[in-house]
Image (cartoon, protein in one colour):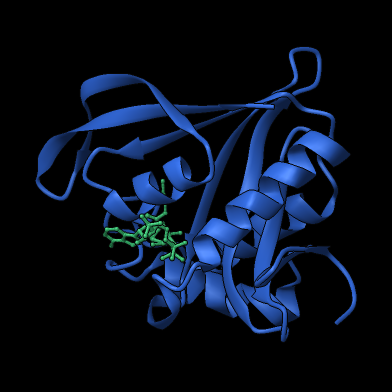
Amino acid sequence: MGYGWEGEKVRLVPPDKDRHLANAVAWLNDPEVTEWTLIGDTPIGRLAEERFFDRTSEGDSADVTFAVETLAGEHVGFTGLHRIDYRHGVALTGAFLGRKDLWRQGLGTDLVRTRTRYAFEVLGLRLLLSEALADNEASIHMLERCGYIEVGRIPRRWFKRGAYRDVILFALEK
Ligand SMILES: CC(C)(COP(=O)(O)OP(=O)(O)OC[C@H]1O[C@@H](n2cnc3c(N)ncnc32)[C@H](O)[C@@H]1OP(=O)(O)O)[C@@H](O)C(=O)NCCC(=O)NCCS
């Protein structure tokens, strides 16, 4: 497995239906994985996910999605740069690790650092934005550890798990 953008623990590779599709469907329908994400509160079927993979494979330059694998080639999650705006050098970032047994081992931090390097050095971007529900401690710690800083907060922005939740806006400048 010698391709993709490599960090210390993970590699960002193009999504592949054979390697990654079944996991995507399983993970996006797992209420623990989606506890604090905006996606995943309605069923995501295989056909819908196949269409997403098809769109991703066409190489839309405004939206880059990677599957995340360990260096040994084991699939652990997904990440992306979305709504890429080359004129202003900005993109929105997001990620999830579906392998709950591998949480809190630094894979999230490594994927964010690898994604950041790719965004700044390969795509030539200069500003990455991200959002996290204020309840999402894992995501907030991970983003802050990788240099993102809180730049704003919208109170009661999203309805999630029975309540309106604050969202925190994060930014990382090159
Ligand atoms: C967010 C996520 C990618 C983090 O991945 P991870 O591999 O567990 O993160 P790391 O091991 O790199 O940990 C990064 C930091 O967060 C902390 N952390 C991780 N999980 C935590 C938790 N549940 N509660 C509190 N802190 C947590 C770690 O201790 C570490 O902080 P430290 O450097 O101060 O010790 C993973 O938890 C996940 O996929 N969650 C579900 C999907 C999701 O919420 N995605 C984000 C949507 S905005």
